[in-house]
Amino acid sequence: MTGLWRRLFGRDPVPDAIADNLAAEEAVVATAEVSGGGTLVVTSWGVWPPSGERIGWHEIAKAAWDKTSLVVTPTVAEEIGPAVELLADARPIRYRLTEPGKVPQAVHERVTQSIRTRNRRELPGGGAWVLQRKVPGRDGLVLQVRPDAGTNPVAARRLAEGLARRLPGTS
Image (cartoon, rainbow, N blue to C red):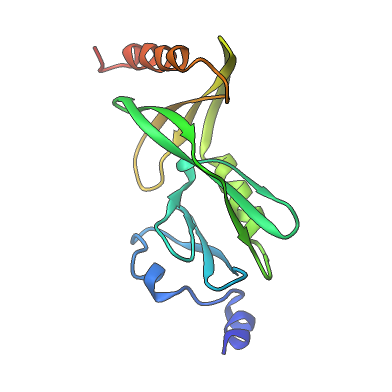
C-alpha cells in the first residue's frame, strides 16, 4: 500500500501519532522512512522525528545532509526577555534515511528561511550570531543570541540582556 500511496500522492502517509498533533495551519512538505523504523515528517512548521515532538524551524541551529543521514542540531533556549533568547546547541540528532527524497532539501530551505536577519558579534573567547527568526504559527520575530563553543558565557549573556533592554516595550 505504501508504494501505491507514494505513486498517487508523492509521499508516504503521515503516521497517525504525528497527524493527530499537526496544527490546523501546518502542512506536510516531505516524509522519509528512517532506518530502524519510523517516519521523519517535514512540515511548514518544523521536523517531526519518528518518536517525539516537533522541532520548530526556529529551534534548529543547523542541519546537514551527508548522503546517508540528516543531522539536526536543535537548540536549548533560555528566555532573556520578551522575544529574546540565549541559545545553546543541544546534542545533534542523526536520522539515517532509507530514501531521503525531498527531505534534506526541504529541511535546509526551511531552516534558512526562518532566519530574517543574521549578524555576527565578536566576544571574548569567540563570538555569537545574533539572529532574528520567524516562529511558525506566531506573529512577529524572536531575537536569538547563539554563541560559538568556547565563547565566554558571561559575555554572551550580557549581549543578550543588552539587546533585550534596547527592544521597544522593554525597560
